[in-house]
Image (cartoon, rainbow, N blue to C red):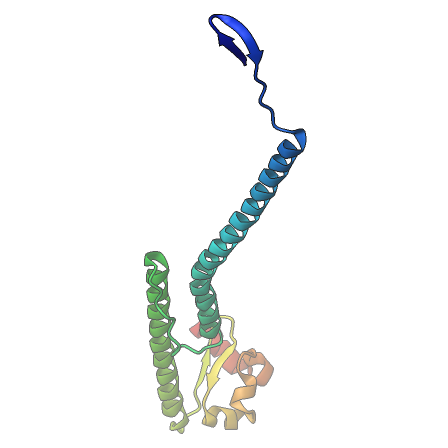
Length: 174
């Protein structure tokens, strides 16, 4: 910049920063930016991990609960997370397990009643499906055919009896 006195240039002032100082400032700024990027990355990773765990924990609990349901542990109840959709899913799965347990208990009770009724009968009783496979057989029928009832379940009637009259009767009934 020029210095003027009475309209005349009497001198020139020059202000400058040494290049080494500029290099130092640029290097310092790069270092600060690099440290800032690392700190922001670490903070972002931490926040991401917290969010991931908050979302994944209820899903992991639901998966483990569903595996317990699959193993037949229908008395287990899933914890209900605060999240609306995941909470309603947990409630629905818990309700499904309770209803499934009720239905299984009812089927078992009915089967036990049926077996008690059949085992108390002195007449031989055989239940056969449309493919002529034995569904159940009481003790009297098993003794009549000389077999064990639990072994012949699922086998065809013709495998345990060669009696043609019986097979014709079954054919007519079916």
